[in-house]
Structure formats: C-alpha cells, structure tokens
Amino acid sequence: MKYILLLLAISLTFGCSMRDITSMDSQTDQDFDLNDNDKDGVIMARERCIGTVNGAGIDNYGCGTVNEINERQELKIMFENDSDYINNRYYQQIEKVADLMNYYPNTQVTIEGHCSKTGSYEHNLALSQARADNVVKVLSDTFGIDSSRLTAIGYSFDRPIDTSNTPAANELNRRVIAEVTGDDTRADMKWHIYTVDQ
Image (cartoon, rainbow, N blue to C red; front, top):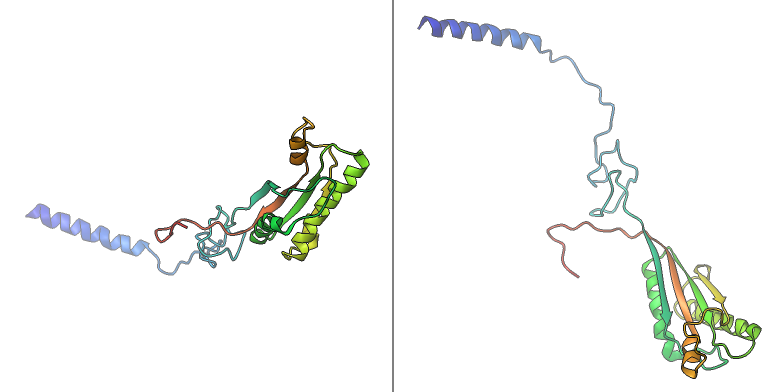
C-alpha cells in the first residue's frame, strides 16, 4: 500500500510540473499558404496553375497535362486526271478533318496536294497546289474553319506512293493528305468511382 501511495504522489508531482511547462500564449507564424483554393488537391504554396477544371488530372503543381497532337491522314478524294475539282460526295472526308479541328481548337492543318507523273513537273506543281487549295476552301467556306489555321502546299509528283506508273498507280498518286498538328489543352479528367464508360 505504501508503494502505491508513493507512486501516486510521484505521478501527481510530475503531472503538475508537465502542465506548468506548456505555454498557451505562444503562436507559430505560418510561412506557407496551405489552403487549396481551387479544390484540386494542391496547396496554394505549391500551386502554379490556379483555376484548373474540377476533376481534371493534374501534376504535383496543379497543372493539367498538355498532349501534342500530330494526326496525319489521307483524304479519300479521287481526283480525275488533270483536275482539281472535288465532288460533293467527298465532303464527308473533309468534314472529318473539320470535326477534329473543332474538337481541338488549338490545332492547325496543312493540306498536301499530290499528283501522278503525267505531264510536266511545273504543270503538276500548279495542279497539286490547286487541289490542296480547294480542300482548304471547303474547310473554310463549308465547315467554318478559320483560314488562319489552314495551310495548303502542292508537291507535284515528288512524293508518289506507287512508282510503277501504271493507271492504278497514277490514280493512287492523285491525292491529298491532311496533317493536323497542335496542342490538346482539353482537361484530361481523372477516373473516379462515378466515371461511366463512354
């Protein structure tokens, strides 16, 4: 019993002395802003991109990722020999390019015109340029793509895809290519438990 009383006395003494050491008057100055004003999970002291879209994927500094776009596709437009005329039935091919550019508003497109190796180089250079120019015109006039985002270039017969000089090869070489380039600045949304497969 003596030992229990002794232990009790010692614990009360130390307990009181510990309370005496702690001072409630001291305050700590906060050097960094620990708030998360845009609710993206990154504190303001680290934040570099304020106002990110709610639910977007971000890096350690609160910035969304920017993906490079480089989409190159052949338009299935069949040109007649020595012609730059685009039949309306091929507008659907051009519309695919317009849709891509509308989806990614920071992109530009270069339309390449190509010819078969029939006739002079100079004639085919002008013809390939006219083919590319006509595709650009359709993108601008029919699908409303701003002309500042469009470039047309003719390559004559410098870049054939079939060099056999057969009628079938010549048909293949009369073509246009669309190359869409730029940055994807659309928010890449994070997966969460409510995400639904599209």
